[in-house]
Amino acid sequence: MAKVKKRVIAVLTGKRGGSGAMITLVQSLRRDPAVKVVPIATDMHLSSFFGGTVKEVEKWYGKTVRVPTKQKGDSHLERGKALARTVDGLLEVFARTKPDILVTLGDRGEVLAACMAALELNIPVAHILGGDVSGNRDGVRIHAVTKLAHLHFPANRDAYERILNLGEEEWRVFDYGSTYIDLVVRGDYTPERIVRKKYGIKPDEPYCICIQHPTTLDEEHSYREARAVYMALKKKGWRTLIVWPCNDQGYSLVLKALKEFENVPQFSVHKNIQAEDFWGLMAGASVMVGNSSSGLMETPYFNLPSITVGHRQDGRVRDTNIIAVEEPTTAKVFSAINLATSPTFKKRCRNHYLFGRGRAGERIAHVLRTVQLGGTLLRKRITY
Image (cartoon, rainbow, N blue to C red; front, side):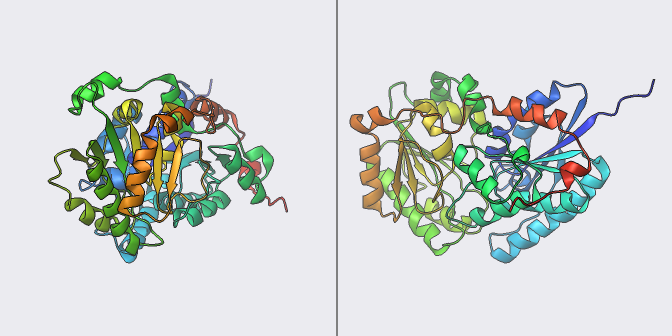
């Protein structure tokens, strides 16, 4: 009897948050003996400067194929060159591993690079978190990825409708919710009492979480916004865990602002926090501040007040726990922190499950295992 060929599914990840969001998907795929998962790590995962998070990826995903971008700085030119090298490296990896499907997530540059490489080798792309909008360059890139992808798994109903409006065929689009919150709903993260001890936070001590990324369409604002956020948190006086920015253009300006606060005793700075600890910290935090998508998507599931700063997340779906400070100054951010941590505001933070009920990973895995490969999947048609 001829040996049945396994379906090869490549899973690409370039950033800690994205890899954590696909844990349940990879787990579901690995349980199927007819599937071979090829994890591919690139971009920030392979940068020692940003914490070298590939080890965390391999803890969940197993051994990865590594595709370094070799990015040397945060200029537009250097980022563009790094992504060109990523396309080249991924072409070689895809030619060698011969995936039947490539899984990508989000709107970052390495995702677009992977889709470009896959297109040239006739590899169908499954894209998670498409259809969103934002106030930076990612908001342009994400729709380019949608047009290069063959299967779509948006995080919310709004994004689902937007993908259909872009002319994608309905049978290709699945409204399953966000994989980011699968483990959160399951409670599969480090308990609050353990993360408090691990990160030196007293049992009843209030604390904040802060993630401030650069603003890629307004880079000159990156320093000013970050400084306003850090100054407001310093003024609040609570223990604050600050996570480094991602490697988008302008990250050096955020780090420049952060360096000015390196001697603030209540601040602790982390290049990365592993996924299960991060969610455990969310469970006990009093407020989250910054411009990370996690402040919009994951915080509602903890009923955690969240302040989104600036325009990076403009247009994204928001639950009732979100406070927006569009033109941030220290005074405005400080006022928002006080509002967010008030008993009155806390009472209105009730999860409305805008990003699903926590089964996205296993449902996406089922589609990837069973979808018919071949010309029908690859041959896209526009519905208008």
